[in-house]
Image 1 (cartoon, helix red, strand yellow):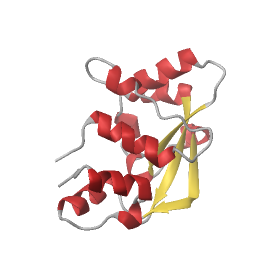
Image 2: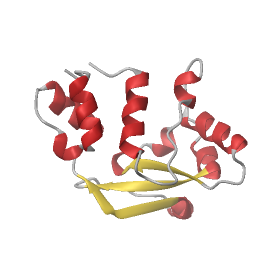
Image 3: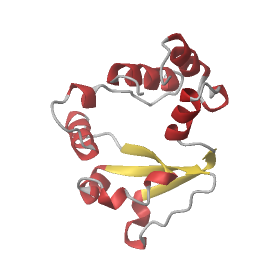
Length: 144
């Protein structure tokens, strides 16, 4: 099972509430039809042309990044901040190396999919989630 778009938005807001310069936005859930990252970044850029955008992705997403919708346009709109994942290797094409920034201090051991599976199996994922998010999931019985 999954969480509604509104629940995911709430969890993202809870997770980033204490971090300055991070804005959680509902653009994608308000958009009609398929929602592609390139469209979201374009809309944010148009609303905030003087801001530098950074797209945060887990290392496990880098290998298929160039299969996303308009990846070169994404690179023209934002720098990609790659969060490390233990045991996950990837290669960034040298011609795009300046567009990717690896955050080596971050090393998340589990993917969001693995956390959802753990929750569905009635396991505790509190070691991998911000406390407010873990409490929200439990209170709303998500991913069971």
